[in-house]
Length: 126
Image (tube, rainbow, N blue to C red; front, side, top):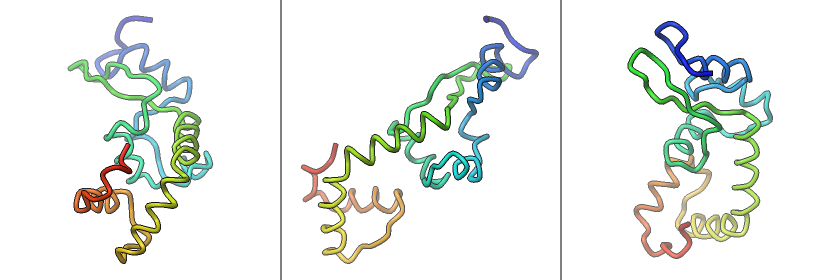
């Protein structure tokens, strides 16, 4: 359904909202919790900005025709579950490496920073 709904968003963006899809900025911590997603909103921002979690759809918004990514909470949960299952063996190896290095219970950003400072683990990177 092409066209614009006033000056704020495309008709397709309105339809996406009606289907329950949301831009990341509209997803709250309580929504994540209610959907069974244990990842923090701040971590989700990192995962989406690095392309690890993919958007469900994108639509034009604002009078400047910005491209805005829309996400389904179900899609986010499924992608996180897939990442978790695929990375379990690697995670065990990395947990050992982090503990050896004296690093424990890191946030995603701290783990990314850790990667940058430890090139000797390059072969474990995706």
